[in-house]
Length: 387
Image (tube, rainbow, N blue to C red; front, side, top):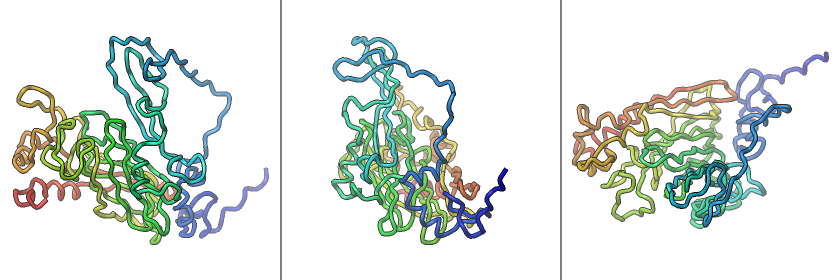
């Protein structure tokens, strides 16, 4: 057998990677890869080459049974019965390399990925029957208001938290999408929702911070975004405070009962119903010096998503502690130690960040973040008023 090719000398990046043979990040390769995450090369870097294997038995695609009368949805199980209209659908957002050029309009999509209706089940992803288009309507608004530029590579999506969760859950109802940015244009974070939960919110990161992954804490309190600080060849996590409101709510309007969220006002950094109208980058956490290139992040606070929901009002109807404790200023005692709702919100947690190239994992203690935020809301009447 021929002798293997010699390993690249230390200081030279391995093919398709940003580290040399010793596992050390090469700054020039790091900077070159940072703005390729929305290209085939960047996708292969983060996720590996496409798997190819032949001769493997695969499951057959279930055949379509029929098309729903009046709306055109295609179903794969059951038979349509118009007397039973228990309709539930699940929507999803997806990002990818543009199908052509570098347009954001061909790199973000939303779809119905399952539904039950009229005694049928639809398990094939398809266009929303309410809006037969792949492009989320939020993208129209972001382009028209200048949040996104339609044909700018800096505004192409590079990572996403898929967050279209169920009603009655305080976890995020929206997907969060990060853009790539460029050496002269900051990367951004924005929302994409479902047909019934699609509030708009966006924010910008500091120039030179390139997002690689995003996660959301269990009550929709914070988005945590791993990224590369390209000018300084440094890994960081951006902490973004999130604030929710009822669907279609605008500043200055009275809040209404939307899945029993807070009725008094927005409470960024505290559990709510995950339909965001507010985002603010509140800081960047430096990762250890041997983790310059984080590629994924996940977080837990140990609070089950339904914890805040399972509470009954005076009439015996299921509700949320958020609505029942509105206004917060008058109900702080219920959320303090010994109070009936003390166990319904996060006191801490852990974020786990990994780096593919450096083969490392870092663990971030979220307790100081939650302690500070909770104390400002609940610590005293004075701090609540200030907040």
